[in-house]
Length: 55
Image 1: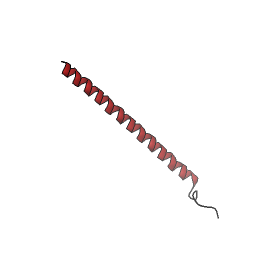
Image 2: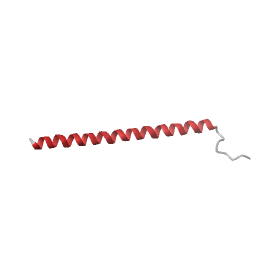
Image 3: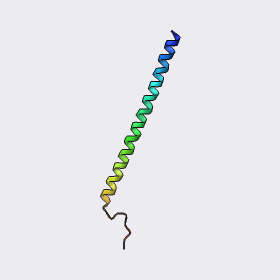
Image 4: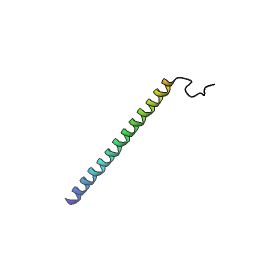
């Protein structure tokens, strides 16, 4: 009985850790995508000659 309980608890802990890491990974990807989208929108708003030196 103790063996079965140990396996169940171990599996639950492992599954919880896997779910936690997956959730953190998804949140990180969402933040990165939002940041890239904001950078793209900012560069599009700046216009085509934003990086050129004035003459």
